[in-house]
Length: 163
Image 1 (tube, rainbow, N blue to C red):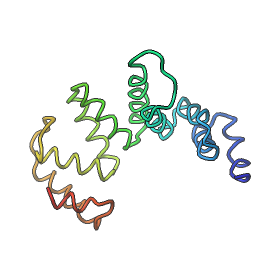
Image 2 (image 1 turned 90 degrees about the vertical axis):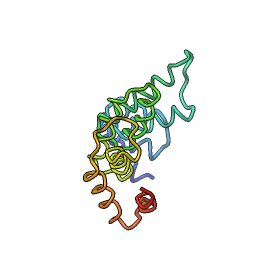
Image 3 (image 1 turned 135 degrees about the vertical axis):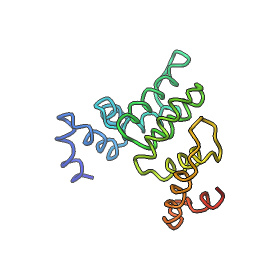
């Protein structure tokens, strides 16, 4: 703890976004997480959304919590965080934003995230088609075949077998 604090704190005090996040990991003090998120660190932005979704933070006006969660997920998604992209899909689904969903599923899949690739493959192979991708069985099943080669990493093999 002392060594980590000694190495990270000076950079955090200078505003380094990753160091600010590491200070949160070291201390579990939410202020560090918020500073890191505000400094633009996508992982911190994702965890701000998660923590607010779990009830952390104070929101007096109805709807402000949901707006803040959406903001953090969007910022984290724009920063390239695939889990944020996948969580942001739920927000877009609830809003009926099919165009946004298509964009973020494809963007998340491009990061190499297994869950995102399997979702993208399923949607373009129309298993099911709920968001209007053009049918592309070759690409969809090619993605499933690649995922199957991961030897059930993360349980993805069972999902691929069902598709």
